[in-house]
Image (cartoon, rainbow over the protein chains, first blue to last red):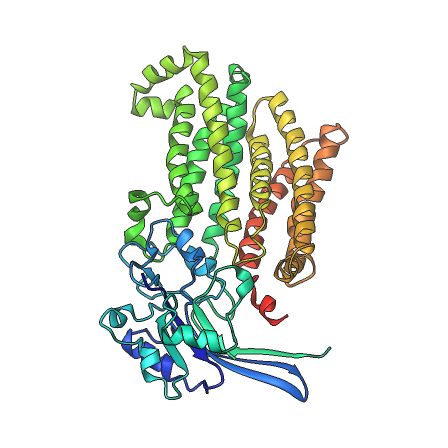
Length: 179
Length: 318
């Protein structure tokens, strides 16, 4: 079984927000809400300052506090690719998963259910790329099977330095940032 | 030294940014009512178990009905919090073993029969007027002291489970460092017991019982202070997110309300008043119990609110 993940090259990302707009359009995200977003992190001591621009979303973690806390099984791991999804018909809107996510990647949709990035599984299952990856003008985003050593994402992780967000939270995220 | 650390985000999701504020008044109110009912079940269960029910004015006969009302109010608050209300029945079509909320939903289903069995021991006159057949049940239960003892045990065990679960619900979330202590259930259980002892003390008609409850409450308040010390020792000797979480209460934005209302007016001052009262230096009044009860409610508000505010971000920076 594949394990889907993303590898994002922070050296190429310019923070243009094309991925954000593509997601909102593809998934019909209501105004004022975001399934993905741009983070700019600046750190260091003048004059030695580093800046990293990242496109962020649900990390589709391997250890999923959002799934374990769900009282109805609405938050679940999909049969294909280990993608973390929410079954809207089972969600009671208790918000436990939103609070349980250390990345604050979830929100409550105005219709009442918990919502978040799906890795555009409806596209992926048809052999297409997620909308955000498809539109990226700098080709900084890569999507694929992390368990396949010959996939583009696996090769990038073997050849480049990378980090994940909040590794100490223990969630084993599946989105990797090349540095 | 003077390192620049700046994080900007384009995300601005409602109740998520700039920090999580998902759970509002409904959850602390529910946790408080669940806690006080848990405490009352343990107290009334103990009174049944220890044979105190033989006293005609035992508080164990009025506790269960009040508990049913308070617990139902709490569950209504919980229902109000749900964003997808028409699907609430989904809680009861599954059991998710890893989800404390699923455990809680099923524990609540078990709590009601235990409370109702306790009510049936001595139904109120209006209940008997509405359903005269209740007296058959009452007769059956009262003919079997062994059954009464077991109703007492069931109330104590389910009370423990209910009180503990209100803490585990929060402490299971590693994403919120302030909640992520395995002592939180002890804190909520002891605080629930303390608020329950104070509340029952307010309406207990039996003098010996009233005195016993005031003494017990003093014990619970001392244990609660001790649990707080242990929780903070644990946090302050842990990783940076946990140290910062503890500082939210100790010196940070939540410190004034924590020190003044939770520790000062909610524990220390009522403890002093009740210590003087049980030693017959002053008379028992409603002041100390009311302070304890309000303190318990504010404790839930502070923990729920500050807990959502606590996060792992800084672990990422250092």
